[in-house]
Length: 259
Ligand code: HXC
Image (cartoon, rainbow, N blue to C red; front, side):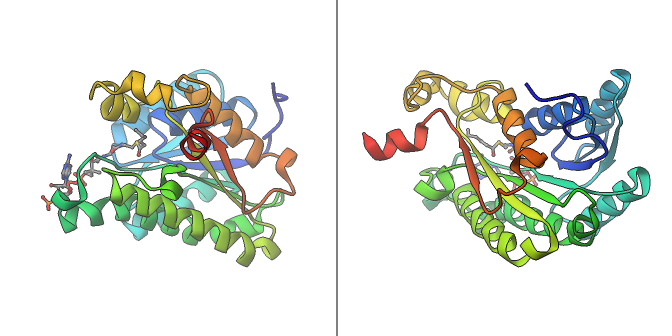
């Protein structure tokens, strides 16, 4: 367990913060002392999530933002700094995905996922840079990817391409911005059972048991597993960790390779 002041005095902006992994990370951060800004396409959803957090006595706010729109991302970043006084942590979590054989995937379908996942991550990093550089704690960027962006992801070429791109972007920025005191890392979740994505793409498709068996541990992870990794990477405990891809997947990618 982390100390209650692990992230005290820091401000985090979480894209796709209204539900799923984003909200889980935001909740963990807020409980450990951070102020959190939740942004997402659905304004009602992020506002409701922030209100729920505030009722628990933590500092949370929300703003509408489609990460495909640089101006909206920039406005969300500036609004965060205006409201909380700094931006110390950026979580690039917003993602879009659907299963579709590549031969049937339209160019617009491919572009849409690249726009959300890869371009949205670049926009976040770019807009946040001056504020992360000014952070008295040292800035931290954490982007949520998957090892399927490294091993390949049959049926999800758009997301595989985007996630592989985010990994390379993150390693590039880790070097470019290391001198500015900004650490840049990624987290690769495996199948997280209590998320909409796994429910829709695996469980509803009748592949739940098969996908669980593909992990070394033989089971799905939980959202809190990813939130714990995100706390570690954002905290001083990971002060010398940058350019890392923290794999939290129950040994799925390794089992693919070893089997
Ligand atoms: C084929 C599809 C499709 C599908 C959309 N398209 N869904 N093609 N099969 N199931 C095509 C459309 O036909 C269109 O192309 C293009 O994609 C854009 O679709 P829109 O619906 O206009 O886009 P938009 O409304 O912007 O929605 C974006 C979206 C949507 C990505 C398509 O699914 C979305 O908003 N998702 C957000 C939530 C989400 O996906 N969460 C998953 C994250 S979880 P044409 O050519 O017709 O114009 C995750 C991890 C998964 O990423 C973990 C493993 C399971």
